[in-house]
Amino acid sequence: MAAPVVILKIFYRKIRPTQTQIPAYIAGELPQISRDLNRNGAQPSPWQSIQVLTDYTKRMALEHDFKMVGQCMRLMAKLYQKGNALVGTAIENVFIFSFSSMLYNCNIVEWRIVQSYMPAELYAVFIQQVLKSKC
Image (cartoon, rainbow, N blue to C red; front, side, top):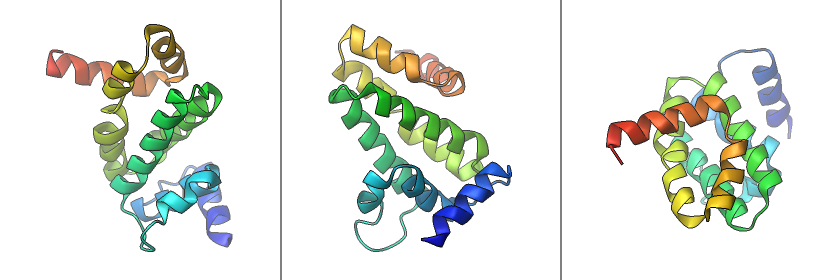
């Protein structure tokens, strides 16, 4: 149980965490998904960790738990800002890319609520992705 405390201290001291610290940090912030993070008993990769958090965020949006969606968005923004380049790439290619599927699975009102919780930095990356794909 000491690992999450160490991870939290790393984030608050503005030290760039390594990708191996990301699963413990996510589990410390959202204990309800720690079982999913450790599903096969091995340490998940940053990509797998971001996918677990992405799936959870989408599920919370579909269940209309927008307060939890906001918490997930803030956590992802913190990881994006403080994580290393590999973590940032994983967030861009997994989490932010998933916004499109959230858009199609929500009605316009739900999408606007989800959108209101998106940190500006992540939303800007989403818009760049949409413009690059010319959708």
